[in-house]
Image (cartoon, rainbow, N blue to C red):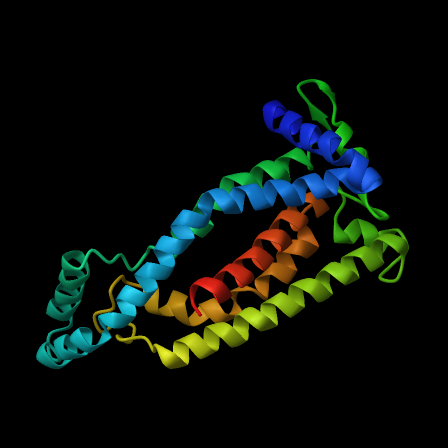
Length: 238
């Protein structure tokens, strides 16, 4: 983790002339953007996979009719069809999974009072009046919702809520255009995938909970990544 802390500190030093007291926060946002750029090829592949899955819907509907009385045979036939067309029903999950290590590194970095036996200097950085190592509960205890730090979180919650509403509306529109081909329990491509897909429009709202409970630095990563995803999906899935 000390190497990662050094990277964040170097980015903050690099951005210091431009962002001054907010250099560390800007470094986290820049780091998040770099991670998303690295994952972007997988996001493009996921978009291609989604279009390919949509193109398979007529053939899957035929399989449902053919194997209506044999759910196990239907599931096997659907999996074989995806394998034949080289379409993975899980391709859209990979970009999110590959970002988890970066998130947990930031979480632990800004939750640790010391790094390599030395005091964690990154904890002294702030976003306006809110410490990057602090949480919403700390802001509430120090001034309340309308205190200096509380207002920072209030602004972040408004941003997250706006992105969540945008994602919700877009996800609902996409699901209406491309409904699930197989109900849960009737031969869905991957067991449980149907339930997960139905929850997807609401997932962005869980970001509000994440921002409220993790250190502010990790919350900035989540907010930046979620906003990036919203814009990226709007471009790739247009």
